[in-house]
Image (cartoon, rainbow, N blue to C red):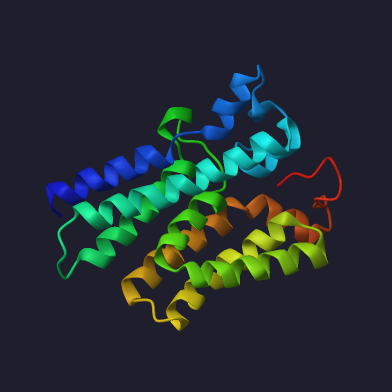
Length: 204
């Protein structure tokens, strides 16, 4: 592993670790971790602070995934390991969001940041996964169910659309991490206790 790759991975992690949801809540005198589900992601920010800050958090969390892999794709040397290196930078960004250094290695569930990484790899796969997300959320009423469905299918969509095996591998690891971070949601879904997005007490 070269010093360039180590540096890129570290910067990707530190970028992904920026807790925008918490920063925006602090700007208005609140701590989003103490309200709603306690999650720092866009869903809970939207619930606690309103649509404007929710959308802003979503955009910033997506950017945390796009920017590291975009910059790494430009700066890292193109060789046989280029694709896996870019994929690992995307994985590092998602890990940063999930296990933020700035929050004592705690964080969000990684959906928006993973979306940013996937968007760089394959916009068409993301578009298809978003359609699946919308359908699942619309039918089930659960944002968590839509997130799980989209995360689970997107690595295979990228592979189907011509993505490489290294990108498929990194994307699959990201998808597994998203599912792991949603373990509490999965438990509530199985028990029929998950609150719908249509209610104000949803716990995504």
